[in-house]
Picture 1 (tube, rainbow, N blue to C red):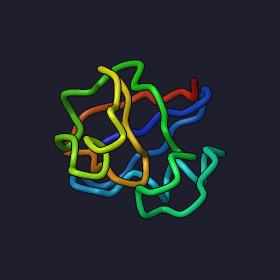
Picture 2 (picture 1 turned 135 degrees about the vertical axis):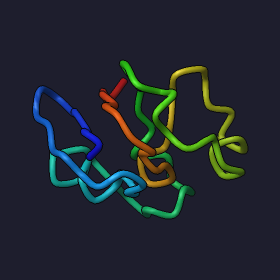
Picture 3 (picture 1 turned 60 degrees about the horizontal axis):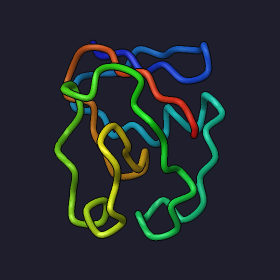
Length: 85
């Protein structure tokens, strides 16, 4: 089981789960969920190595190191902690 942490709350999810539904349940804001609006742009506090690689939509947004679009990534395993900002 993998673990997603956001704003001090956490949830366990099966390995290979897309993170957006869990992050939304934990209170992260979302807009389009298609990787177009950037509303769910977040920083990965820890566990970046546990996420899928950046996809084309994230690369098009010129993500800084340590940033992801929560609607576009999958947690492979382990723990990932997100924050906004």
